[in-house]
Amino acid sequence: MRKLIDTAHIKVVLAAIVWGSSGVFIKYLGLPAPLIAFFRVGIPVAVLAGWFIYHREPIFVNGIRLMLVASAVNALRLIFYFVGYLNAPIGNAVIILYTWPVFAVLMGYFFLNEPMPPRNIGLLVLAMAGIALVFSGKPFSVENKVFIGMGAMLLSALLNAASVTLFKHQSPRFSPLKILFFQNFLGVLVFLPFVFIHGNELTFQKTTTASLYALLVGVAGYGLFFFALRSIRASTASFLAYIEVVSAVLFGVWVFNEVLSLHEIAGGSMIILASVMLKK
Image (cartoon, rainbow, N blue to C red; front, side, top):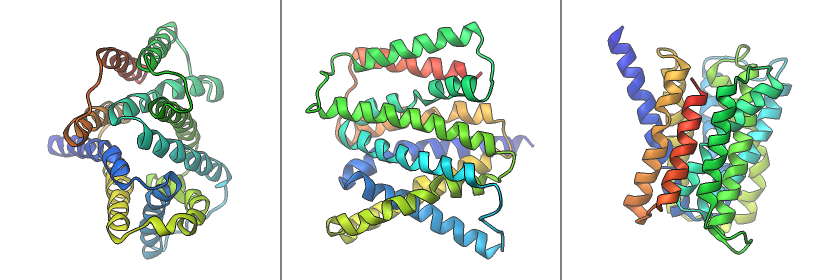
């Protein structure tokens, strides 16, 4: 039993490291956000559809309307996610991305009737102060790519919280693989036209890299995470997932020589601390 738990921990850590590589892939590709998004959702859907067909498991069953709404929200989230990474430094982007648990707590309170003790209110204030600190020193301007990227990632975090809330509401009715399938499904339909609009920007190398990115993050990363949940508590897995922040920052330093300022480190620490404590 101990060995199974240790293996599950390793799976989550590996998943978080894989997720942390996203910024490097996205910046290297440098393709329009909807085109990268098509690969990110299309390959997981194709792989999972093949899995369900092979096992003769029905995909489209009664009661998937809310799942499709969540899928649409996730598709919109991905646009802002890629815009964020394409414009902001990896370290800044991933710190802002991890404000999503803060928004999830708020949505859980308003839409799922989850409790909001005074302690959580204090942690929400701490997280908001951290966001303000990270954004400080970034001039508010549509010409400031870093500010636009961080703003897009903040919207992505908000939409991620919404999709997580919706999928959480449906989780008793659907398996993890079904949730992963529908998480990406509508995005394929939404982003497919951009393959024809921007297809001339694809080279063999970029197509291969985008496909590898989708397999690593969309299939392997999330696959490791969901299968690990069979052996460990969701709270433990969520805590280990914060390794993505460290992983992403280190990738940014290693590949692009990025450096975080002191106030960005302080603000990021406030956000991560609040997010971790909110999950307890």
